[in-house]
Image (cartoon, rainbow, N blue to C red; front, side):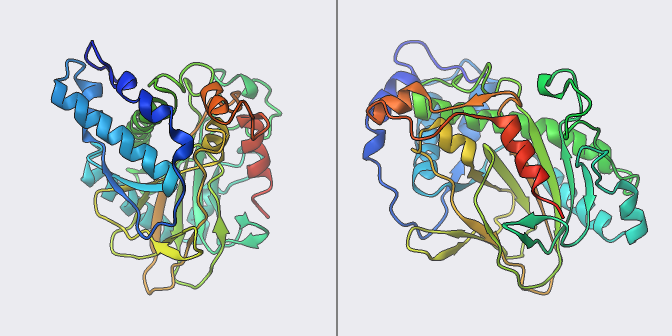
Length: 345
């Protein structure tokens, strides 16, 4: 957990920011900010921080808050995930997608697997349009820790289907999932500080036992422009270096390239954070356009609320909106289930 020095805390020093949130407008952006989160990583690992460390962490929290308000996307660097592991994750994805159709179909996604596993080109649907990518979907296994999963007839009850080849796929990805959950938690602690002055704002019944999803997506070279808006809480994207494909739409309707920056993740916020923030944070329309000559792999990790969390505007965010709740409560697990069940042909 992030811990700060006694005395004037980071939360207290952010109070003036929290009291003036509604004055920040979402002007059109022309680039995506790059944020070094190493001060947050340092403070999680070393609670006895210096005043200088505390000031650096405060600056990062402010940068994340600004990015969520003004862009909805940002890069993170200094995150502590080994670059070699990021590269290996994508390489293993490439290796899997080069297998024969027969081999890939050994982990074919079905209703019986709880919609986990491999999906073929065009099987995933966005806004009624077939997505020209293939993918493997992983998410939390059927587990008694997730009370909404206690009934085996729940549409998402099931176990992840892991490829036999490449042999390193399962152990490497399982290690990666643990690391990514820690990173997601660190960023959400910063968002909690920014929104309500508490790093624990999303602990407990909100996201203290976070659900997760991970997709390994393969995009063959072709022109397709299908737009979407983040439907989750927080997404961290590990994308192939050297292949320009991801675009983000600004307020003027211009498409801004989210070019790969080696060693970074592209982070975007989704609908769940929109609701919790009462619209102070809004997800941004984006799309993938892989019209070059290379096969592209992207591995988004989705850090989510508790499966049974009731997501509704936070009290402090409603207060800044004169007590108005701009969004109705939604149960995250129901939201996710509806999304998945309407996502495939």
